[in-house]
Length: 304
Figure 1 (spheres, helix red, strand yellow):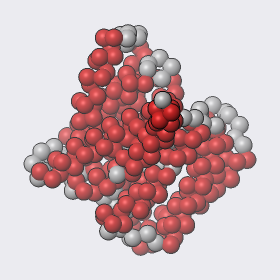
Figure 2 (cartoon, helix red, strand yellow):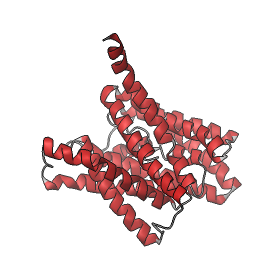
Figure 3 (cartoon, rainbow, N blue to C red):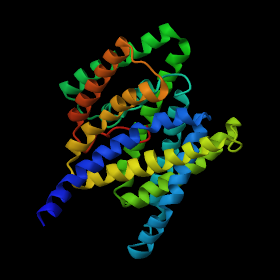
Figure 4 (cartoon, rainbow, N blue to C red):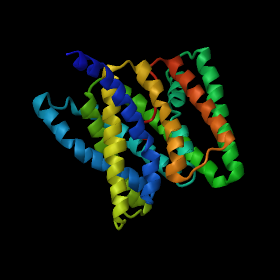
């Protein structure tokens, strides 16, 4: 009985660590696939949607059907924003490092707070403005050094920041959508819409959806099962058993772990200015997150 009690206490922390590790491999999988970023995103989300479909339909039969169809506007918008987030972020990896893409893709708390200030007229604390200075200063350090080294690196960094903006918009939509739909239903419907949008994006851009070598297909499946299903379910379990004040800051370890994994797995180096800028961004995002409170500010971007 004692072991059982200890296990129950430890399991949420193990799930949180597992989730961070799974999500940290997102950029690694995109690079390993050697396929256009939006194609990787399409298979990552569509395979995960297929895997989670039995859970969704079983819940619908056992619990309750979906509510008024009018509330489906939220997963519809959420799916479109998720598709844009993934497409832009995965594309950024063609131009910048895995470390930079993951770091700058996790600036969503900045965009959410600014939206609350500009649109909702919420007052922002001094902690937010200090965090904003750190975040922008760190991003400028990373962007500036990359533009000086190679202009395409800077383009990739900007794309990664754009993905953070789309995730921030997704979070704002989700805040309203989750008032009407349970977690599994909302996430599955968002994934379904996102898969369809990503399919259209790839067709519009002329990216091939087939003809890839066997290793690439294994990477597609790995990205879906490990980063998408494993990452989402582990973090969701942790959020259900641990305070958001513990989970959210822990997820900011994802960019750090990605940067470390990219050294042996992708052969990427970590320059001094990259490290300094990255630390400033992480510090700034943490301050912004705490200034908004855990219920109003998004955690790290699970798509990245």
